[in-house]
Image: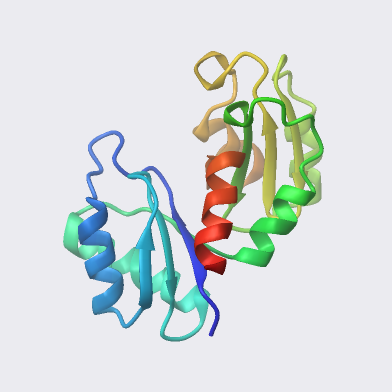
Length: 175
């Protein structure tokens, strides 16, 4: 089994504290090997003991049991992350403004069309498969786009990372 990247939504914000040392310990307890984390925002890289999606569901359950809050865990391979970066349809410019928002599933085409018809100016958005590509023109703090708007609009939730972080996660998964 190849290493996988696990992206945990909304960790260490809004009272959902999950120290990375405890996340690494939990992943190891669940049978994962080659366990690493990157920054304190819920980025786990490891080789799961079985199916990547089964491990993600187990991790969700164990995080809720141990820490008292539910957070979605999204599994992606290094190749899937690389494909998402390669498909990024906008000028990345400063990578801190170029984001990939990894969704929990592929949204319905009608929901995508309706969602993209909204005015999120000056930001640019595109949905490609199970990924929302975002170019924040004025920065994340100034956007009209929010996590609840994404979830309501696309019918699925997810978690975002800037391109610099995604590239680092690819490197960690491949090393």
